Length: 398
Ligand code: PMP
Image 1: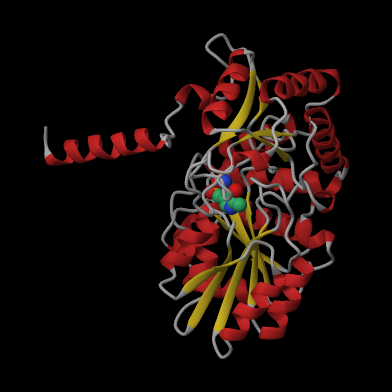
Image 2 (image 1 turned 60 degrees about the vertical axis):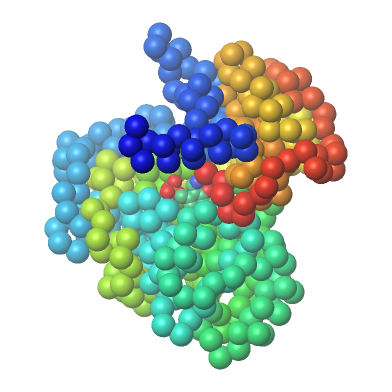
């Protein structure tokens, strides 16, 4: 056994002891089984059911036939295709932002936005529950960074006051998927404006769901506001793959020149760009999609006896990581896929079943599936979890 084998074995043993081994392959199997039977999907991020919508699939097919399977180069070489420009225009139309730049993933979009917009003499402040990609982006920015208490505009105000004289980038999410709460974006932007800070809002869980599908920023009348940047993933409600940063044309221009995860990355695959473009157009033209996912989320929350979360994902607190895993496995065996989040992927250390509402799954079938989840999850009061949970790590939800 080499030194590396011994090291890997030791790390594995540590994960096992802490109960944080993520390799529950059986739980993570999604999609049709070997006999092409679909499980009931209440776990994926396909909030509007668009990933298999015939209109989206046809758009992807056409782009595949027209451009091939790959963009074949980085965007600044020959990897910018007409379909990228169409996608960026559609994302602007959907969100009301002046300019958009597509990235190969939402993760790369966050890396690009934060690294390019910080730089010498600047600092970064993250909401304590911000997604792992925002934490990683802050680290990669090589500037001082810190977190401020979750959704606390007064605390942000105090943090910005102590940083007077510095250029500060503040990064938050619009809707947090684990706790399911929405950010007080108006208050946060007002504080940022007062301190001349730039606000980056990750709308990963807001787009397609909040604001009749146009996102929480749009719903609050903040689209196009100064010193406001939105980042998106195209892989949740838009049913495709990829990411984007949206802001002023000057911000787009700056990112094209300085965002390393844009410059040194192959352009978004044409089929993904075309699928996301068609999805963005559908969402912009048809507010009933967002209405349906919200109504189905309401049904799930009511049947499971929990307060409805702001986004598509409804979280059921569980007494322990083991109870969460076993309930999720039981549901899997019964043909229902739900998410299972345990420490360190939960900001408050409380394990949860995550049940995702979809626009295209409703009626008696949804009632039946939600009742099954409610039975398996039982009724659990989160306060009782104190002391039974592992060490939380901020921003670590997948
Ligand atoms: N931001 C948030 C808030 C997310 O939840 C995710 C996906 N888990 C991402 C960014 C990354 O997006 P992508 O999967 O497109 O890389």
